[in-house]
Image 1: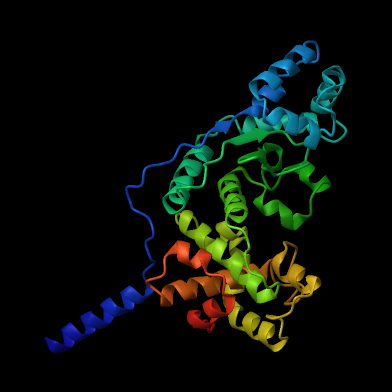
Image 2: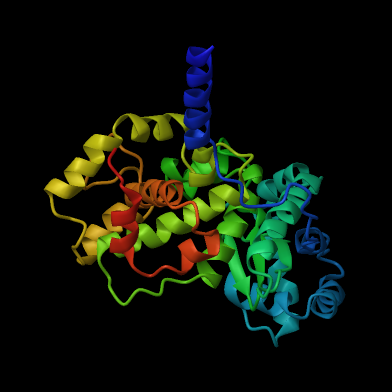
Length: 334
């Protein structure tokens, strides 16, 4: 009997050590985020009634329409007569595939309830942690392959034509293969919330070392993973499962290589870019690796830190500016 009790206690300890921390109430009410279908209104512009249609767009979307005209079309907002000539040409273009893309966009985004539900649930968690941050309105628009995400004041805009599926044929003309994996409709909620967090929880360290940048980005990714806890971590990271599994298998070798090269305390832009920016691989590590390995390691360190410091809240993690302290208290040893 004593032996059975002892085994039961050991199992309880092991389970408590490996269980994930719960940061949010289970009954958290969704926060409604407006998803504005500017894309539909834009695609309904008719060449015959273009001038009238454009004036309606300015009336109904007074904040976003000027941004779209200037930043995406590169045209002056004041000259509506010229815009009435150029906008139908932009929408009907077949040389660059815009007309074909617009048809595909209508099909892919015929129903956006999945995006709306995911955004409402995600921003409920963001609001729970940071109630003073204003929730954005999110516009869907047609970018002509120019932009995935834009900020419009406190609001955000998503280029729907950049999320038509990794296999969409016209992407071969405008992006690299490694960029296609996240050009899917289901990636929009993570991309929106990620951009929102990086903008509203900015880098505050006075140091520009790789370590500080790794930990900052890793903290945001850890937070993002808690917000999207129903998603597998590779989806949150923007990796394929195979890329994530490669990182896990080689985690110790990656860390030892970073340490052996003494890269943690380097500030050279080329080193930071290699570890932190997206790319086909992380040049400082291996051509077999995925990009942004510095961010991935920063996430793993942040995760280890939170596992070893149960009293630390998510807000305290994000607010902690001392990257060396987080590394030290993470006991990170892959």
